[in-house]
Every structure is written in C-alpha cells, then in structure tokens.
Amino acid sequence: MRLVALARAQMQDIVRNPMVLFFLACMPVMGAVMKATMPTSAHSFLATTLFVMTAYFAGWTIPSFTLAEEKEKRQLEALFLTPVRPWQVVLVKGGIGLVGSVGLGLLMFPILGESPQHPLLWLASYTVLTLFAVGIGTLVGLLVKDMRSLGVGGTPVVLVFIFASTLPWALMQPGVWAVMAWLPTRPAVELIAAGITGESVPVARNLLVMLAYVVLLWLLNARLIRRLSFAGR
Image 1 (cartoon, one colour):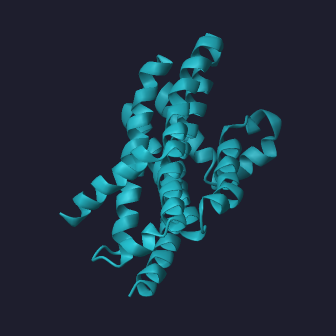
Image 2 (tube, rainbow, N blue to C red):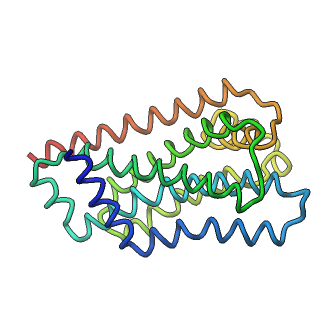
Image 3 (cartoon, rainbow, N blue to C red):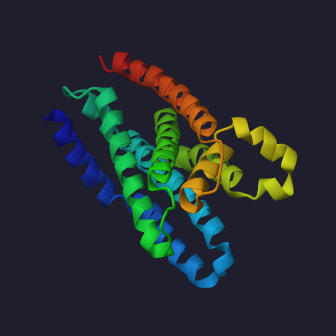
C-alpha cells in the first residue's frame, strides 16, 4: 500500500516536470520525422538506433531528473523523515522508468511502421537495455546534488552511451567494434537489431554481457542506497 501511494506521488511529480516530458516526447517526434525523411533502405538501421535512444532517454531521464529535483528542493530529505525508506523510493522510480520506457518503445513501432521479426527477443533485449539505462539514471541521480550538477556531470554520461551505441563503428573502426562486444554498447544494438530484422547474432553471449553490467550497476546502486538508509536514521 505504501509503494502504491509513493508511485502515485512520483507519477504526479513526473507529469509536473517539463524536462522529463520534453525528453519523453522527443522520441516519437524524432521517429515520425526520420521515417518521413529517411529512405526505406535505412529504416531497419533507423529503427534500431531510435529504440536504443528511446531506452536510454526514457530509462535514464525518469530516475535521474526526479532524484536531482527532489534533492534540489530538499523533498528527498523530507521524504526520508517519513516511514518511506530510500530503497522504496528508488524501486518506485526504477519501476516507473522501466514501464515508461517499454511502453514508449512499443509506441515507436506504429510510428516507425515497423514490426519485430522476433518480438520476444526484442522485448527481452529492450528490457535489459532499459534496466541498464535506469541503473545509470539512478546512479547519476544518487550522486548529483541538484539539477545543475545533473546537467553538467550527468547528461554527458548518457550521451556517451547513446553515441557509443548508435554510431556505425563496424564501418568506421572495426577494431573498436570488436572490443565493444564486451562493453554494454554493441550487445544491446545487436540484440535489438536481431529482434527487429531477424538477423543472426550471438544472443546468449550478448544477453550475458548486458546482464553482467546490469547486475554490477545495481550492486553499486544498492551500496549507495544503503548509505542513504543509514544517513536517514
């Protein structure tokens, strides 16, 4: 019951936050514009790129912006004076980020005029990437002090991941692309592309690589959340 009330309050904060709404609205608009202007031969690459960007923008924006704003307005400190615990706050923010990102990702299919060849693979890969993006957003939100420090130190982080994932490294730098097989960039792109086009990729290896980074990231977040819990006592 406490989590439900907290989720409702968090949703109200998200709806009132113009920056969060702006970032979430960018992707459908970008998808519609790029579909109308890009040639048909580029649609598969376009769809993969936009799905990666959507997962990062939606998954990262919700926890990072709301945590930074609550810190800036000292709402987070006031919240911790109630029976609500820090892990519950992060769980709700992460859950909203995950659901919002997956919902936005599904919305992109009719906008792009695409349908996945392997829907379950697309859903699994997109969900894992979103968990990674939500983890980054949570980590950044826990570390920054306010919206200004988020803009200076947090936003560049997610932009690096987006560009590292979406630039055509296989054509530009094959050596870099080979190394990226073990980073949280290439596996996500290959899995989402395989879900959309049906192309053959090392699914098990890519999923394991992504899951390893997701676990490491959330273990780090758990450590920071534990510190907040002790600080709030």
